[in-house]
Every structure is written in structure tokens, then in C-alpha cells.
Amino acid sequence: MSSPALFVLLALVAYGIAYFAYGKWFDRNVWKPDPKRTTPAHMYTDGVEYFPVTKYVLWGYQFKSVAALGPILGPYIAINYGWAPALAWIILGNFFIGWLQDYGSIMLSIRNQGRSFGPITYEFTGHAGRNTLLGFILFYLLIISATFIYFIALFWHIFPSTFAATVGIILVGVLAGQLLYKVRANVVMTTLLALVLIALVIWAAAAFPFLQTPQGAWPPNPAQGVSAGGIAGEWSLLVWGLIACVILYLASVLPLPQFIQPINYVSFFPTFLAVILILIGALVSGFTGVRLEQPAWVAFNPGGNSPMWPLMFVAIACGSISGWHSLVSSSSTAKQLDVETDAHPVGAGAMLSEGLLALASLAAYMIIPREQLTGSVGAWVAGAIKFTAPFLGGEAATGFLRAYFGVVLILYALTVQALVTRFWRLVSTEVFQGPLSVLGQKHVATFIGLLVPLAFAATGSWNNLWLYFGGSNQLLAGLALMLITIHLARTKAPTIYTLIPATFMIVTTISAIAWQVVKVYLPAFLGTTPTLVQFPFNQYPAFARAMDGIFVLVGVALFILGLVMAFRTYSAYAAAGRPPGAAPRVSMGDD
Image (cartoon, rainbow, N blue to C red; front, top):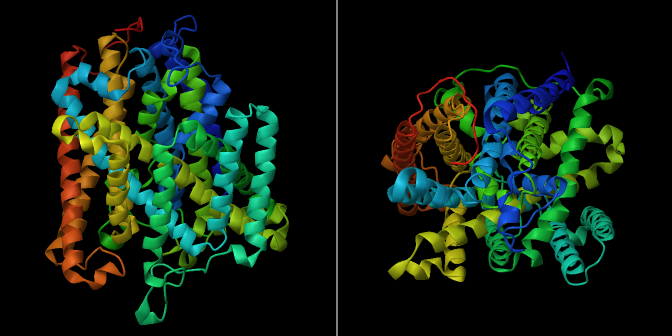
């Protein structure tokens, strides 16, 4: 087989079976959604948090709130084992675990009066369990913020047209928000206007050199004559990171309808269109002459320090399963669900759609020669252009396509990171009370929630940040599945279908975090391996050693908090009186 068409088709069929066959069967035998049951959106309607939304709009909101860089860059790491294991995890992980968590998180919340994970965890595991979970979430949000800020800065640095395009799309989003909420303009007309303006913005960014920033390379290698270039040389990533933090600060403190909501809305269209275009390119690759360039299998432990288990299962974060999705599903989406039967198309549908993004990304890497892929984290853009240029204008269109797919990468990171920053602020308000309440103040919490990740992003090497992010993200997913399992046990519903995935994810992710602490960060801190702090901060040995030590402490904190939380959830499950694998019984829904 010389093209990726058949493998992409196989995955599409598998996702169809997951949604229409396994999903429907799971509905009938486990959750039994009732369209006549009143949802929290109707029960507590306030027009702010609780309000019913049609399933079509809510699906788009859910997709844009959960789809980020995880399904794009995870396959870039995973393809080091060969594309076959990466493809298998993207298909099977989503089929048996991913959508179950997203859908289950929505159902868990609406069957518990629209409450989010904090109060639900308090009810299931007590005060200590709630505090442990919130502590884990704070560390998790710091890591995910560091990772996404790093990549926003990196992509602005290496793709010259993308900063102007990003700013232009943000302004289009703000304008759309004013038209929708101030002028009360027609939604369809506003959307069409926004799409035209976005196309013009990207075209202008690609066509006019004065809108393009100086191109940079990363990481620079002075010994080989490779300079950083960019807008500030070796400090470019730090400068771009600061600029990203300014945008994220606004996203955190401004009202949702004025900034995040309309920007995420208009960003949905170009980002989802990119997925469709790449998949079309993959399906017709047999006719366009695009060939596989990567091997199906490389090794279980390439390089000798990266075993496929557990690392590949946390490297592909979000494309198969993601804990961030459970936070969005339980704290936001569930409060807008019109009827219970919408939970399946919204939760499962958005998760399987994100699986398409992971599939498209893996396909984009499969067609890049190995020597060009190594060390080129922006290779996704090259693969996307290779797939789509044959039917979108050929060589003449590559400038526009490079700007388009480049800014799509940034939009996937920026739109979700805006929500993450805001979520950090809200969790800080809940965690820091009494004498520490100043840390939960809106501006103080946002400042801290950006300063610490910026420090991590400016100093940490990206692949190690990514594995911490993946480990904590997937561990949160395992814990979310345990909360779902406890609820099912308490309502006398079958638990085996969520208990086994939860156990697999918890064991795998805790092992991955422990591996990275012991095998990667601790040796660097002890000086037995080179520092993991990146250029130019690695030129200051004492500072680099201190940062390596901080990364060790972060990993230890994630490991301990995750282990304690896992113990508490399994204890709560045992107390619910449901042994694993017991015969299914009909659920009546509520506790």
C-alpha cells in the first residue's frame, strides 16, 4: 500500500461504528437518556450559565472548546514508533474510551443537577477528595498552559505570516461579537461577513511582506551556524510568549460575549475546514500521487529511553481521550443541554470529530520523509499542503496554504488556552479562600496563571513539557471515568465499560509520569545527563539546574496527587457496593 487512503478510510468506518452501533447500544444499556426528563438548562435557567442550546450549536461549541494541539502534535511524537501503533491507539482509544468519557461527563453532570466535578467529587469522596482533585487540576492547568503558550510562541516564530493573520482573526471575532450582541445583527449574515473577512486576512498576511514578521529557526544551534532569527533573536520565544500572555489576559478578564465566545465561534470554521480538507486529500491521495513516506513499525523502545507503553498513550493527548474534555463537558456544556438525548451527538459526536483531527494529523506526518520530519514540529503544515495543494491550486497556492494551515495551528492552541486561562482563574477563586483569598482575585489569579506557565514555556524543552501535559491530561481523564463509574455503581447501572478504561488510563498515566520524573528530569537535575532547559537559558548552569529541580517537583506533585485521588475514587467505588463485572441492571438515572 503506497498511499494512506485505505487506512484513513478504515478509521472513518471505525468511528462510524463507534457512534452508530456501540454508542447506541451503550445508550440503551447504561445511561438510558430520557428526552422527557428536565435538564439543568431548563431547571435553573439564568441566561448566564444555564440556558438551553440546540444540539447543533452545542456540538460546535463543544468541539471548539476541546479540540486543540493534542490531536495534532501527539501523533508527531507517536510516529517515532511507526504509524501503525499510533493509528491503532487513535482508533481504539477513541472507540472504547474517549467518547465514553466526554459523553459520560455530560450525563454525570446533568444527572447531578448540573454540578461540576468539584461538588460531585465532594459528594463521592468527601472534603479531602475534593481538595486533592482541585490541587491536581491546578498543577494540570499550569502544565497545559505552559505547553500551549510555548507552541503559540513557536509557531509565530517559525511561520512569518501567522502573527498578522492571528491578530486579524481576533479582531474579526471581536467585531462579530459586537454585531451579534450589541447591534443584534442576523447570525447568518454576521457569520458570512466574518468568514469573508477571515479569508481576506489570511490572504493579505500571505501576500504582503510588510505584514510578515522575520522568520526564525528553533532550536538555534550556534555551533552549526543556525541562528534563532525572528523578532528578537535568541529571546524571540520569550517575547512571543509575552505577547500571547497579553491576549490570554484579556480572554480571562473580559466578559465572555466580548472576547472569547465570538473569537472561538469564528475560529471554528477555518479550523474544522482544515480537518475536512486534509482528510479529502488523504482519501484521494491514490489519485494525486501522494505516497506514504513513514514506516508502519519502527521499534517498541526507539532510542532506548522511550518505551511505547506507557509513553505513546500519553503522547497522543486528546486524539484518543482527554481529561480537559471532562472539565468542559461537566462545567459548561452540561449546563446548556436542551434534552438528555442531545448528550450523545454533542459529547460523543464532538469527541469522535476530534478523533478525525488526530487522524488527519497522523496522515499528514505519514507522507513526510523521516529525515524531514525529525526535529520539525511544524511539519504538520508541510503535510497538509502536500495533501491539499494538488486540488487547491497547485504550486501557486502554497503561499496562501502555508499561511492558512499555520494560523490554524495557532487557533487550535489559542482558543482552547483562552478557556484554560479563564478556568484557572475560576478554580483559583474556589481553592484560595480566607487569608489566601487575594490569590483568587480576578487579576491576581490571571497574572499568576500566566507568569508561571510562561516561565516553564520559556525554559522547558517542548517534548518534555508535552509528556507532562499528556500524562496529567490523560490521568485526569482516568479520574473522570472513575467518577462516572462511581455514579453508575450508585445508580445500579453497568460499570464494567467505564471501570476497565479508567483503570487502564490511571495505571498508564501514573506510570508515564513516574517514568519521566525518574528517567528524564531527575538525571538532568543530578547532572548525570545534560540539562533539559532550552537555549538560551541553558547557558546559565545554576539557573538551569534550579529549573530542572522545579520540573522534578512538579512531576512528583502530579504523581502523588494522582495516586491519592485514584485511591480515593477506587475506595468510593468499593463503597458503592458494586463489584467489577456484575450483571447489568436497569438504571433509573438519578441517585
